[in-house]
Length: 384
Image (cartoon, rainbow, N blue to C red; front, side):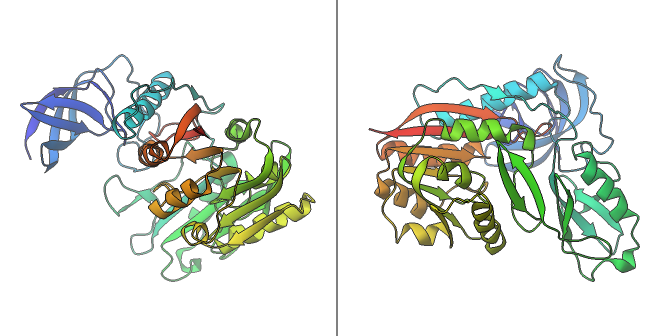
């Protein structure tokens, strides 16, 4: 592949550094704004070249030495080369870029990213990849399905790091045959691993967020950075109250419980049966009888329902399906809170909601994922 000398202008959605060379747009992995680099072109897609760093000719003042020995090979973190201040700036710029370029907003709101109290050792949930033939355990290598053998992951909370060490010390013959990955999550009362094997159990955990108690396990989704969840929930709901609230993709009920304290009636919709079971249990333990959880895909459910005074949605990284956005528009709820872990799919869906008559009331971002380009964004919208 060809080699180029480029200067990085800024960080793009997806975490790539942007450069230009001989009429081409160049996307460079693991770059910092202001870097002067010699890069190797890995592939071409139309006028866009995707490249990796061969040599740092002049380092950006925002570049630091990544502390993790696996950085660059492991596909997990891609911002360790940036100072934390620059990581937050880059994430704010990624959100602004998506809102301007994808959502077509003429006046992009100010974006402030709330920093994580912990830049390292914050992650309470992970998926560890396993290659039993090669006897490696860790995360996929960047751009491949090879497993990078990781002994110490610097973003895991201490309880998960200790569990990683225990799993690695377990004999390979004790792993279930054909096991490809492990889901792990921590809580106030230990660690849950799925699937169970040897001395590792898929046990029920609990965690208190904003005064609410949540139960869950490794088979049900829960956010990875608990230190910011209280602030995130407060912003998403703020002064919301009224008759009927709908919580789409509700998981174990992170938003459902506080919604049930503000609205006369709450409906949570969740496709995962394990998460559904925990959401119902969490409501019952909180003595919140005015909320019910529907175990169904959100796309199927919105086709059948048509009433809500407030809608909260927290979809997966792919965003909400088109039929879900249409269903939300059909609800005609006066207010919506959209919680997103991907600025690009958020902007795509916001474009449809704004075309349907909604306007952005306020926006906030939370750095749930330090050392990566990912960022959690919450947008509150009003109808009319």
